[in-house]
Amino acid sequence: MNNKLKPALIGGVFIGVLSVIPFVSAANLCCCLWAILGGMLATYLYVKGSPTPASAGDGAVLGVIAGAMGAVISLILGIPIALAMGPTMRNMIVSLMHNVDPRQAEIMRQQFEASGDAIAPLIIQSLIGAALLFVFAILGGLLGVPIFEKRKGTPPPPPAFNPSGGTGGYAA
Image 1 (cartoon, rainbow, N blue to C red):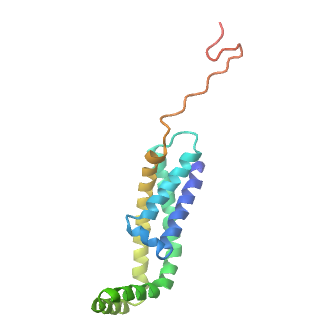
Image 2 (image 1 turned 60 degrees about the vertical axis):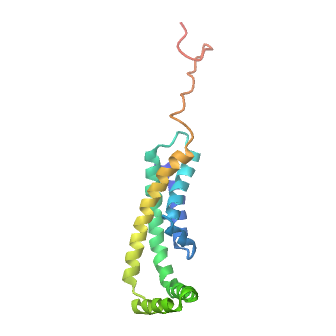
Image 3 (image 1 turned 180 degrees about the vertical axis):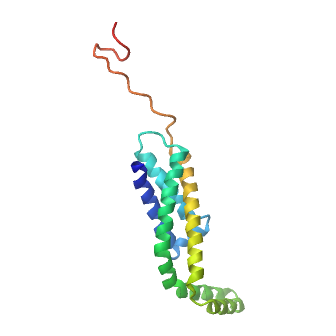
């Protein structure tokens, strides 16, 4: 298990940090891209350092650990960042929308003002996002095994040492 922990934690930090950085986190709108790539990163690092071929079970375990770590990081960092960046993001969305359709931009601005800065919806949204990161990291871990593991089966055992000069069996 220890040989899986370091690659999985690296994958989890990858998931968590990239999922909370404003604008960069938008890639998660594409099928939780950072979660899948974080699970695959964990599998890649594990396969690279493992003396034996990785199995689908190894990929799933790596994805579980990476996903859990990424979910925790996204909750701990994501909620404060969302609270701090919320008004800025809303103003930017309204100004972008204003260039497309000023009437629709005004409707959006009114909706944003009506919703206020309520924290409960933000927490619920963050919990749902963390659950999605967890699930998609497992998928990334599972996908990483057939992509990165090129070894087939277990390596053959080394030849037996025979003090009489042969490589196997017993001297008669």
